[in-house]
Length: 111
Length: 114
Image (cartoon, rainbow over all chains, first blue to last red; front, side, top):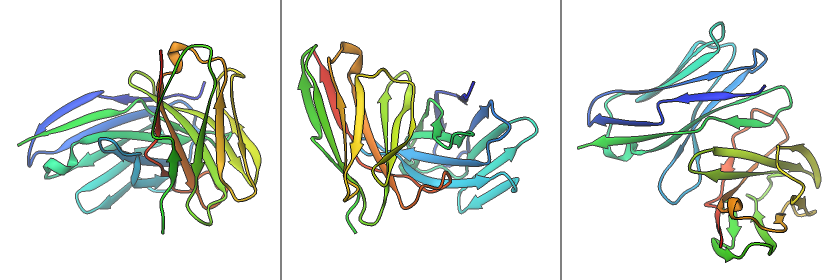
């Protein structure tokens, strides 16, 4: 079935270190892979996305990598800062076009 | 430009009651999606409306329904509320019906069922 698995569910890193969140998906037809960040009391917000014809995309301290053969994609945050503390969701669209989200990763940056 | 507005922000209901939640999308956005967020299940897709037509529907019972008006505003209704319906209900809008468009989320309506 259409499924997105996300790991880990919680992650704590020292300020300045890197954080990596991984997702795997079940449908080889997926072609769009966004990442959303949800801060406390707010709705999720798109931070970066990647399409299936690209293997990696960077935007300042965040990057996303995609391995279509293995059906997994990852979010990398470098030089983490306190404002990076939030819940992060990966997502992808399956054949019926709805956006399916992973279960989320609560990232805590330790000062 | 105003963001996505959801009302009410918080509400408390009892089992068996029904509830209606409202969502005003960003001006010009014609697609509205609804998600249920719970601690253990993440974001679960409920349905999407585009130009007043339901385009997609998630795996929720018939107690969950929605509609979209000609001004793109949307409502969702949950009838015969159960304890398990307690959740944050998020509405998101986007400009088109494309499956790769950015979703703009509201802050959600937090429903507690007692």
